[in-house]
Length: 96
Image (cartoon, rainbow, N blue to C red; front, side, top):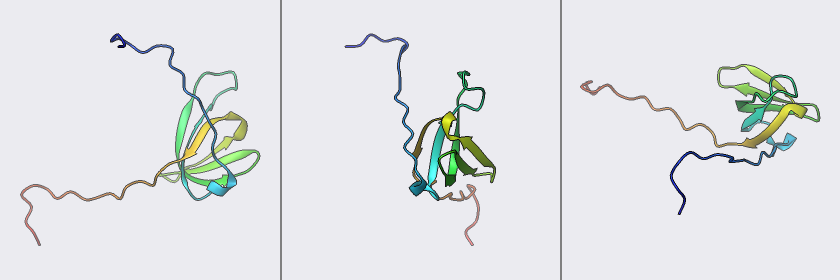
């Protein structure tokens, strides 16, 4: 049995699993936006607009177009579509 406490030294295997065949699908890409020797990483989530030998282009939910140099992409995969949003009725609201 493992002793309770903080988890340290955990490593994840980063895989870039995106190709041109994934254009039009919802994806997430983890990449380095700063210099290549930086440890800073960020994720972008959106629709893959373009994938070629040089870059990935992703359109985010707020319509920003993010161009990610392929050599800075650390991991990427297709993710499920967003569930449809439902409008909640306010409690006490009358039915039409």
